[in-house]
Amino acid sequence: MAFEPFKGVRPLTRASALRDSLAGVMLASMNVPQLLGYARIAGMPAVTGLYAGFLPLVAFACFGASRHLVVAADSATATIFASRLSTMAAPGSAEYVALAGMTALLTALMLLIARVFRLGFLADFLSRTVLVGFLTGVGVQVGIAMLGDMLGLTVSSRRTVVQLGQIVKQLPHLHWPTFAIAAAVVALILVFKHYRPRWPVPLVTVVAGIAFSASLNFAAHGISIMGPVAGGLPPFSFPAVGWFQVMDLLQVAASCFVIIVAQSAATSRAFAQQYHERTDDDANLLGLAAANVAAGLSGAFVVNGSPTQTAMGDSAGARSQFAQLVFAGVVLLVLLFASRWLQYLPHCVLAAIVFTIAVGLVHIGQLIDIRKESRGEFRLAVTTAIAVVVIGVENGILIAIGLSLLRHVRHSYRPHTMVLVPNEQGRWLPETSQPGMQTAPGLIVYRFGADLFYANDHLFVDEVKLLVDSAPATVRCLVVDATAITDLDYSAGRSVNDLCEELEHRGIKVVFGRVNRYLRADMDRHGITPVVGAGNIYQTLHEALAAARPDLNIHAEN
Image 1 (tube, rainbow, N blue to C red):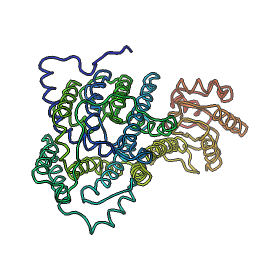
Image 2: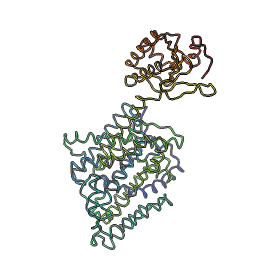
Image 3: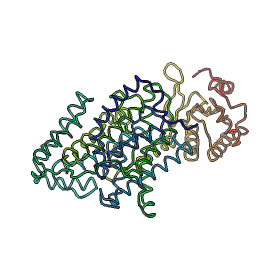
Image 4: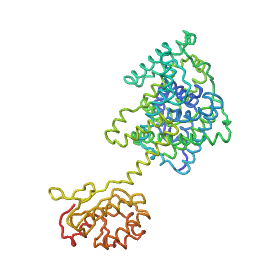
């Protein structure tokens, strides 16, 4: 597919430009404080949060395809690389900033490779359940990390459990004025978020915090403030990072890559579906790669397609990337003309804003819904959240993906198996397979609930033998309902062949029903068809049962 610049902007009319311009200003008013908060989460200088909301947005608008996705700083990716980079350099230092820039460039390279090889489908391997658990864990981790600044306490560790212990030990020494300001900000934001979600309350609290801090000299009263903040255009340079450090950053970049692909794809698909638009995951990968190149070269850090900021943009009325371009323009104005005032911003105000972001990431309602529908997936979500909090975001997400894939493999390894048995009215209905079950005297209709492959072929063979051996009447015919079997590998082919030959020697006829053309091709290729007989393989279950009736003299139907 040819590259189409500004695909997420076009078509643009005068009316839509005006609408998106107003939405972009509203989005900027709500998000500028959050950009500062994301920089805080990332351990970066505050101004780099604004950098992350400038050129990366322009780059995605140029190269991406989604009309709605807001690509900027995000708490999930910020937490991932901060957890690793903080062990390599002091947060906020020039070396740390360089490492963050290189992480963004490595992430961009992985996204570009994914685009070249059309790997947008990788987004499907991180389930919504895992994302809910991951974001919940990130929310808990970020919330705890902000408590030190909100309480006026010193927290030295980057590990969540240790941080919590340090805070508990220092509680008798909390700074009450700092705590009062933070509590007021949290209460205001959460109350207005519930009743007036479109009001830019975080921006109001930042402006008020700066005004009160400058006029009342908060710093003289023991309330920590940000201090001088560099303004102007972002610096352009290639991060000065050594080769061995680059190798250390590969795992961090890979973790960011996975989250970006999954979270951005899920968000862009959701909003495209809402507005009946087509999605192009591969074009979005190119846009995300360009955005992270812009971030890495402009002194910022990894950017992501943010679900929360995209939802905020949608609620503000944004319907194309033109709104994001206006958002970037507002950020540029802040960088050029308002950055000097940020030095008076109290850390407790910024920490309180970040804390409310963290609260929004803890999806208790979704966890409850997951538990109601699937206890197994609920355990997966909770395990993911605990892994993120205890082990760290970087390794937690990899564990989460592994658990998600293992759960899928387990379903294939131990699929549901059933036998058709008659009910009180004599109608055959599927029931969970148990020894001693039979469909009719001399007949067993067995249904296997997954593809047959090397890990589950023994289950198929063992269960069929057990059903045959424990049947109350001598089995003369086994009908395999192959509804769920679409694929059969070499190992399974050998096992099925051996089973059919053994049953034939015992005088038991084997018939396959509901065999689709893909399974039939596998049966032909692996030599099962000659063993069973081409005349005993049918496309429907009714035909298979009809083939069994002459030998059994049965008349019931499924």
